[in-house]
View 1 (cartoon, rainbow, N blue to C red):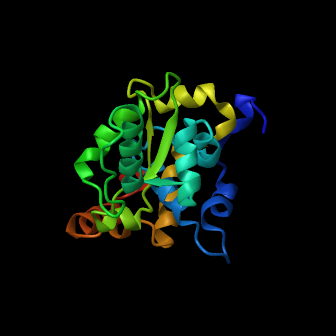
View 2 (view 1 turned 135 degrees about the vertical axis):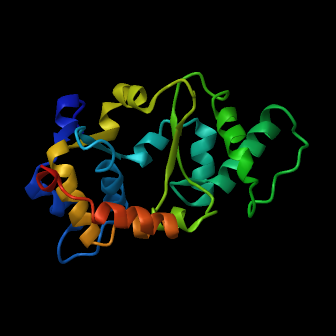
Length: 218
């Protein structure tokens, strides 16, 4: 892939939106459509941004024992329980050779922050970890949630990608297209009502659905 940053930043045109996110006649690309929904929110005067990341290539920059752990588990994606187990093994290797490995079937949710903090101690060079969060709410399922975290909490995602331009595409949604794109996603059943099940999600969807457009307000 080209390392030219300019070739990896694209402005999304109206005619490209459905091809990328809705793909008529084919199954909906849920993860991309959900990401597009959130990118079309916020200020109506600001562009939206989508980051399309090659997480498999990003994980190739992890420390060797992290990669070995993924290979042993037969997957290319971490989850919270795996991270907990991995950090137990790391602690065993470097500090307590006789400690017990935690049960792979469970993970204390509040320990995830401690786990990721420990990651930053294992390698001087920053790296990024993608993982599936614990399913503690229906929203996580509906949103096809996936979290990312840099090893160094002081390093921003933008800064890390700037050093690894081959790992991502940045797609800009022009501000003037955001309302139109969000309406199309709503027609495909990607909206607050489905992504945030419950009264608050329905209320937010109704408020947005019946909100007058700019032309109607002037």
